[in-house]
Image (cartoon, rainbow, N blue to C red; front, side):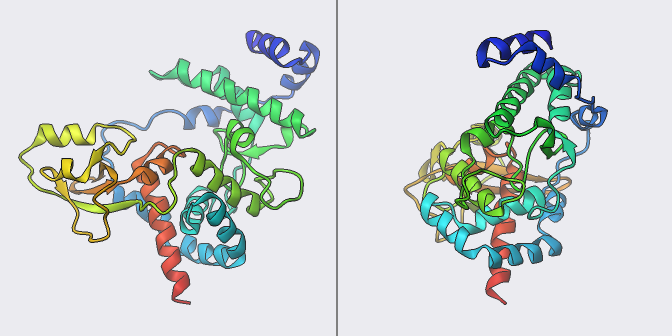
Length: 311
């Protein structure tokens, strides 16, 4: 803690007195620490179970109402940043059920706990560095907005507002989309809409590029080739021609002149789903580094769009 305070003093012009006064108000959050522990090994991933948590009637109904209410703002964000309304809607729906679950932890408490007492995991040091960076951004954000840092509430990991931005992302990517002269992701859904679109645009979203197409394995007798195709990380690194001996899509809408990545959505003891994913799919994974997460955003937004059209 003392090294962090020293860094804030030398780097950002704080005084030790004011920082000590702030940190005396911090409360340790054991729950945040416990929730950061990795899940117990052995339980297989299950995409269908994961999807069912997010693509469900309550979120769909809430999503239609949200889209109806903010249709003009969603259209403006799509025009300005190139991110479709249904992706913005899907992401906010997955994150907080359209502002209904934004978190009740004091962000300063959660970030300070995780910055200096992250649970003992293989990535502990790297994660502590990450949360110290977010704590730094939290203090700077509060100072820049002339607010008490303890007024900010969020998740156990310190994510804030309708889109669950970390403080560093708020400072870098959040926008005043409602034009009231300030950025407020907790109380302004319009700021959240613009900020989500801006974030995705800054993380590689391409206007008018599709997202993903269901795929079928050509042969299950190519384990090495399949493992190689699946092991490229969060990137679209193949032309469709390069994947033709491994997987194909029956969709006539899939362009043949763009890059794809092959992704797998495991279903426990049932068959794994395979998809050809574009750069836009992987842009969503930079919001949350999970295929399940990105596909839930894609799916929820699409289902809400269909439900809205049926009204």
